[in-house]
Length: 239
Image (cartoon, rainbow, N blue to C red; front, side):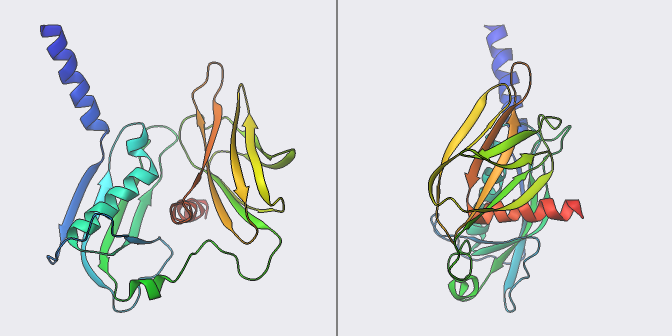
C-alpha cells in the first residue's frame, strides 16, 4: 500500500511538472468571451492595429515532454486566457522554441487585446495566394528537439522536395494538384495524404521521433495561422 501511494505521488508530481505554467496580469476587467469565440493572433512580425486596447499580458511556459508542450496546445492556452479576460486578439511579443538539448516546450508571452471591427481588420482567409496561379505553396519547417542530428529527404509522390534538417525552413511551389502523398524514410517510412489546391498555402511541421536504431521522420499539416507564427520565429532565429 505504501509503495502504491508513493508511486501515485511521484506520478502526480511528474505530470504537474510537465503541465504548462500560466501567468496572467490584467490592467482592466472585462466580461469574458464565450468559449467558442475565436481569438485572433498577431505574430511577432505583425503590428498592432491602431486603436486596439491592451488589457493585460499572459505568459505560458513549462518544462517537459509530450503534446502539452507543443505549439498548438500552448497557443490555445494563451487564447483561453484572452477569452477569460474579454480579449478578442493577442499579440505575441516573445516566443521561445523547444531547444535541441533540454526544454522541449514552447514558451510564449503575449499581450491581450480588444480590437474593434476585428473581422474587417483581419480580413478573410490568409492562406490564399494572389491571382490565378497554377501552383500551391508548401512551407516546410523544423525546429530543435529530439533527433537534431537526423536529417531526411521529403518526397511528394515520386518527387524529391527537400532535405529536412534541424532548424530548417523552405518555401516550395507544388505543381501537382489533387490528392498526393508526402513521405520520408529513415529506418521506417512515414507518410500522410495531402489534398493540394492551386492558389492555397500549406504549412508542414516536421520532426524526428525516437526509433530503434535511429530517429524516425514525422510531420503534420498544421493550421495556417499556427504554422505562420512558428515559421516567423524560426526565420527570426536564423538572422
